[in-house]
Length: 344
Ligand code: HEC
Ligand code: HEC
Ligand code: HEC
Ligand code: HEC
Ligand code: HEC
Ligand code: HEC
Ligand code: HEC
Ligand code: HEC
Ligand code: HEC
Ligand code: HEC
Image (cartoon, rainbow, N blue to C red; front, side, top):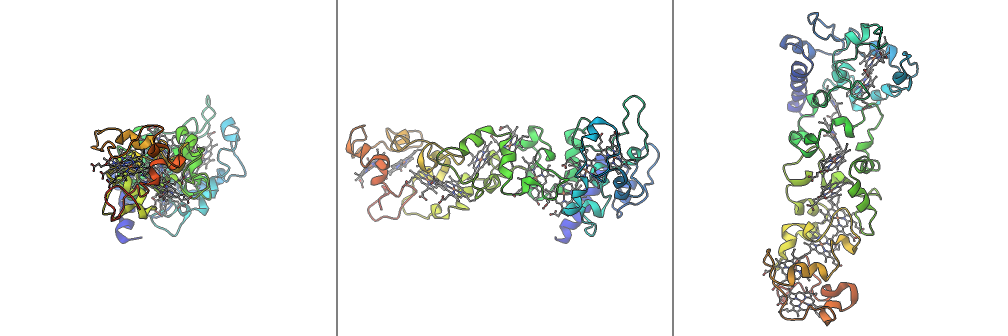
């Protein structure tokens, strides 16, 4: 962890306290003090509890649920202390929540929650400043601000304005905090979470030809950054081809004879999520080729002149499925001395 990033964490934490949790500049300075500092903000402002997590754990220890409230009695907080096994629970790390206000680094100042009795009509305590799930959850903006106060940089550089931000996803739409290991960070369990909203991609992953996603060898985040991207469709790299080259380096070339659609965008011919056709092809060969080569098309592909490409002609069906590829076998580009037509 660089010094700059370390300082960044502190600065961001302080800013969030000012902007998100309703403190003044003066108390934001206190907010940068280590854990469990006695809260000294004025009466109408939310206060931090005086003993930090120790206070919370009196009631939220998982094992003994303290409330008769039905929703609470379901055991919604039974895993609360699993957080202690994660980087967030690291007391020795000054930029982790437990190096700061412990539970309240995320849930916000919660003294009123601790002190309040049950409301006579609702039989409930005053909620903490930030509630992440359940019927009393805070607004998406408030919840995300709590996380972004420490995590705005790095992979989240393009979060603002990203597809997921625009469609009102919360960080906790994907992340789970009170578990020993967040399932979205585990390759074997990540796709399931994404599939829960992306049914089309789930269906494609069951096609005959697919990237080995369900087999656990490739995950969505090998190609996508779900937090945002400077390029289209949340891809990690601005260009599709660069995304693919990171694993299929052999397709990068350089080649003496380049096939223009390959240079432009692999998805001219492939569907990365799956296909009924072999090799993730969007269409079977020769139909794939003839989309562009039956006549001059808007990419400037030449129509075929030297041999017939009519159904029943030799070059159409020759050797079954491979068809055009029997001769034009180096379809991603070639260095062949025989010329520009992708022969071996
Ligand atoms: C005196 C017992 C007690 C203490 C101490 C306590 N809580 Fe709670 N907390 C409860 C109860 C009971 C509920 C369930 C809501 C209700 O029935 O009032 C609850 C609910 C919550 C909720 C969910 C709120 C909601 O509206 O859904 C959060 C988050 C929470 N507590 C966090 C904390 C944090 C953080 C601390 C320490 C600063 C803390 N609690 C200290 C008893 C306590
Ligand atoms: C007070 C600062 C702080 C807050 C608030 C905070 N985090 Fe973190 N988070 C950290 C630190 C420090 C680490 C571990 C070091 C690092 O950045 O890689 C971490 C790690 C993580 C990780 C990686 C965990 C792992 O097992 O590798 C995830 C995911 C994460 N945070 C998500 C969140 C989400 C979601 C929220 C809001 C609910 C949040 N964080 C709130 C400071 C914070
Ligand atoms: C659409 C799902 C999704 C959303 C929404 C999401 N994340 Fe993540 N997050 C992931 C995935 C998947 C990973 C693992 C990334 C990887 O392995 O490349 C991750 C990794 C992380 C990490 C650990 C890696 C790192 O950057 O150091 C942090 C921290 C994190 N997310 C914070 C956040 C915060 C803060 C938000 C809300 C602003 C958020 N995430 C929203 C899916 C999501
Ligand atoms: C890194 C941020 C973070 C820290 C630190 C944190 N929580 Fe949470 N808490 C969350 C998130 C996010 C949820 C939503 C459920 C989940 O992701 O596990 C949650 C859920 C809860 C709930 C269930 C009610 C609700 O919807 O908010 C309780 C109760 C709770 N936390 C108490 C605590 C206590 C007690 C501590 C300290 C021991 C603590 N939390 C520390 C982020 C945090
Ligand atoms: C091998 C790289 C790769 C992997 C792995 C991958 N994607 Fe994609 N994804 C892409 C590319 C490239 C596009 C752009 C497609 C286009 O422009 O036709 C895309 C587009 C998308 C889109 C936009 C809709 C669309 O089809 O254009 C969604 C949603 C999506 N991916 C979700 C996922 C999910 C969920 C996973 C994991 C289950 C995943 N992707 C895994 C490369 C990948
Ligand atoms: C809570 C639901 C939800 C979850 C979970 C989720 N997404 Fe999304 N995702 C959306 C919504 C809503 C959109 C925007 C509408 C759309 O394009 O479908 C979106 C958009 C996208 C896009 C861009 C589509 C485009 O056309 O630009 C990609 C790529 C994507 N998600 C990938 C992922 C990946 C990878 C994961 C898991 C790490 C994931 N999503 C998890 C709801 C979700
Ligand atoms: C994280 C690494 C990774 C990335 C990134 C990646 N691939 Fe793959 N790709 C693989 C693996 C692994 C296989 C399976 C290889 C095998 O089964 O021998 C594969 C197989 C393929 C296949 C052959 C499928 C079949 O049925 O034989 C095609 C086509 C393909 N990838 C295209 C792409 C395209 C297009 C992109 C960019 C959108 C891309 N890949 C990005 C790892 C990756
Ligand atoms: C003009 C259409 C077209 C484009 C564009 C294209 N491919 Fe292909 N690709 C094919 C065809 C056809 C096959 C099947 C080749 C065969 O069976 O001999 C194939 C097969 C593959 C395979 C599996 C067999 C092998 O050669 O390794 C991979 C991996 C692959 N392509 C990756 C890519 C990548 C990465 C890109 C973008 C840089 C890309 N393709 C762009 C047509 C295309
Ligand atoms: C998305 C459109 C597209 C698809 C699909 C496509 N091509 Fe091309 N192809 C082009 C373009 C554009 C050129 C460059 C034309 C030029 O340089 O005049 C080209 C060039 C060629 C050339 C070299 C022509 C020459 O005169 O040097 C051959 C051979 C060729 N393609 C064969 C194929 C085969 C076989 C397939 C199917 C596997 C295929 N193409 C699929 C667009 C496409
Ligand atoms: C039996 C081998 C063979 C098969 C099969 C074949 N071609 Fe060709 N193709 C050639 C030869 C030979 C040339 C001329 C090469 C030269 O002029 O250097 C050629 C040239 C081309 C050209 C360059 C433009 C032109 O006509 O001069 C395109 C485009 C092309 N073929 C597309 C296709 C498509 C699409 C298919 C499948 C429907 C296909 N070819 C099947 C052998 C074949």
